[in-house]
Image 1 (tube, helix red, strand yellow):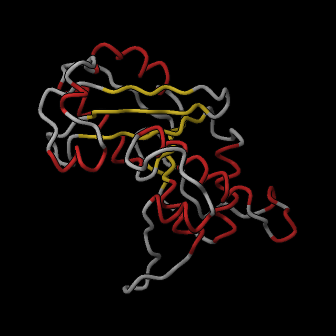
Image 2 (cartoon, rainbow, N blue to C red):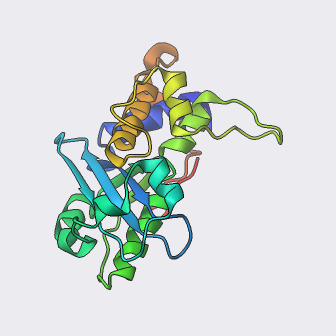
Length: 214
């Protein structure tokens, strides 16, 4: 994917070309198949509405995650579990375009959490757009094996001049940072700025539970 195509895709997504957009992020107990969410946040681009919830997990949060996020077992012990917010999460996320930084991980964590808590029919996206992939194609910095380098969210923000709105590794701060990254890419100038004439024929749009890989 060219840098110009990355800019155009960011514009198309934020402009609602593919439907209503929610930017989201999760914080979790870990990364394996037994991990679940401890925090979820989302921003609905079209309305400007947000949702952010701490979630009491079925298992303990490891110390490493407590240090990374600042979310402790003590804090979560007085929170509701995901069952309490089932309808809110479904209504906010279901049948929307999901944008995230490594969004396939967020999808997996949402579905794992619903499964762990025996909740049927987790929310599903109509399309997933990975802001990390877009940022990589926008920056076009080569790695040691000849592909484009992946940038952490904080690194992408620094390169784009985006100031975090809170602490990284908290879901609302990371949600808004992801949105700002996409917005900065979308705001970059195209040659002649004939944005609607750019060739997007080589960009694969994959529906439902597939990420938009560029």
